[in-house]
Length: 358
Ligand SMILES: [Mg+2]
Image 1 (cartoon, rainbow, N blue to C red):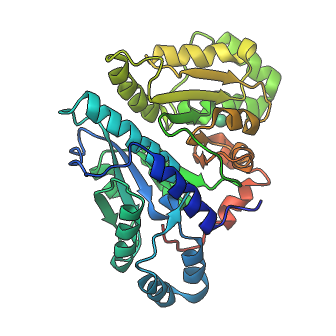
Image 2: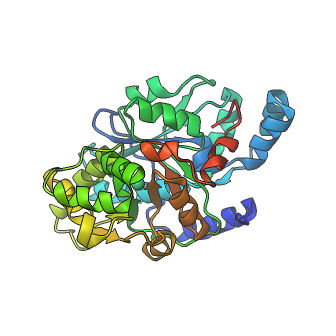
Image 3: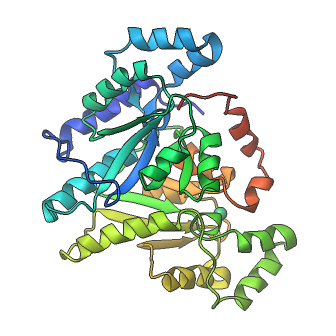
């Protein structure tokens, strides 16, 4: 898979930033963490730092710091989480217009284990791309968990699967974000978030039946338990957060043109096992704007049509299928599927050096 080059990423986003009406000229005050919908993003998820990461891995910390220092005035190119963060900021701009005094907004925290010296290059990059990120957490290599909790984090996106797994184990919604194989245009005025169902919004209880006893038993089980809601999965809370903000737009008559749109993209089939998924969402008082039951068909082509800013799945197979067709996909390391790594799933381990800068 030939990933877009740093130059291509720069020019793509610079073209978009110039015509994005939500690009801020004046920075408003960030909301208090307890009122905000906090998204913590790592520096390697937000920006493309592949060159720097290679220097760190091959030449060590001193060479890495010296490279960063020499390139301090050069902004980083956008990374995989960049379009999502841009869309989140466009939603904030609309919320501020409709509710000037409310602090129920997204707040983005940059969570990085980078050395403070790299902070200046990160600040330059944030200013260059006109992002609203006021909160930085430079953990100096320590675990981010305590900081994620202190910020009441609603979602943590990182390029480091070890830290993401740690966050999931602590009950924090988290995912490892992967760059797409090609650049796809995503909407500028509507944040689109797509979720897998089992082991993402829902627990993995049905997935366990499938893995242990096969598809027929799974269908039977789901039919028999149709009216019993599934337990919640790691990203249920984030869907709830998006739902709360959607309600604020609905209250102002913006239901059809709401700047947030959510999608359930599941391998379940509508007739045999989809009912339980929909009934579970309803029992929680939640819904997605669209529900796509693919009955085992590949998710990548459907996501290519939806053009979400991010897609969450617990299986690397689906993450890879999505990224190949240009969707930014994020892996949620939760549930039984983690014990059955796919051929591609092995890459995730290979991708994680013993010590990683994020
Ligand atoms: Mg799943």
